[in-house]
Image 1 (cartoon, chains in turn yellow, green):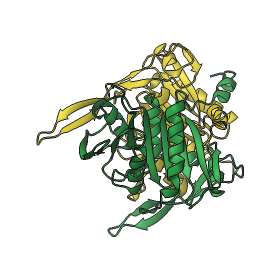
Image 2 (spheres, helix red, strand yellow):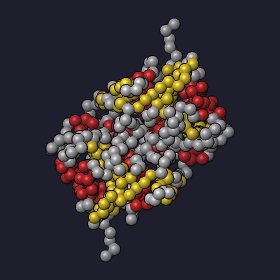
Image 3 (cartoon, chains in turn yellow, orange):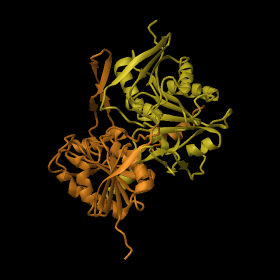
Image 4 (cartoon, chains in turn green, blue):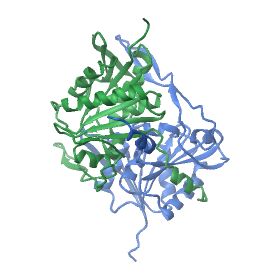
Length: 254
Length: 254
């Protein structure tokens, strides 16, 4: 018997000790051997950033049959990169990010460290899925997400994903969902993004805050699907070329 | 005479004092009033990351007719956000990132702070252009890029860009170019990404390094165009939904 269970690599941007990733790793152990390499602390909003100016460290936090957990001082992308380079015992069959504490729908996927995990996985040619719950509560109830995570993971392990494509799955903050919608990224714009504060020793500092104005009404836009209590699955490409503008610009005279 | 010159907002990820952004701001002053809000130090590889865990500071570094320069402790995206919220005297007609010291072609656009600037600009509905030179030399010769920057900026100011689209312009490290290609993002994969070092006090640390393996040969792929001495202009969308997979997944049973 040399048949091996699938290896599943897991990371996130809330840190290895967050509740969301701990729920996720337990679900994924049903499907294969799980290796977690996740930031040692919160790295929310880190998008696809990578660490080039300082070296990073990675260390084992815990080990049990079928599950090994590492912490890493790098970004979510760094975690996937260093895991694939130096940690996993064989090529992962699947890379999973999450479960994020907070919404990663719409064009906000660009800011998301959870999406950084899966874009990095996708760049390595490995099927990759991000899961996020629309609640920032550290003790959020992730249990309604579990049957849907099982279903998506089972199908991706069986069907695979097209090369260069990954999935961004967002769950409403709700006990029971209206169903599943396969979505596109909603468009929208952040407003009132900063709150100014005077530093005790002088000088004005700005805290990031704000509201996301999404004027979409189409139920196929992920943000709208979530607002209507649907699980939103947004297939995402790493190639974000605008092919329509590409054709049009061939007539520009530069 | 109430007609105002276009306002052009400039940022980068190498910091406000880098040579590339200083070349760029002088060229852009030919087209309008220039406001620079750029990181106070190098923030390469920061992608679309944003700063939510600490407040950021922004201060004026210099002022002359038609040009004001601010430094900011935030990421490239933060710079654009805080500039639009608290600094620019009117809505920018154009947001420009660069000139980056280093290549931002191919799927590496995801890691790029220079692209972070223009993706943020694009999310705000403002035409946005990133310029990068394929040289990391702090004293690189940017002069061959200047006529092309003029041409692209002039046309974008005149024609605009479609909502949700921005431009990623990369220049070969060369004195004279073969011409201009309108490109798609090349695909490829990083290999040998980390170099392990022992810390003097014990423990293994990893420095990010590596080679980008691009097996493409199509001259319309930006990395290939650059290798053939062409200026590569890659039109880029902020919506990176995979619409083909979206249609296909409607037949999945989740």
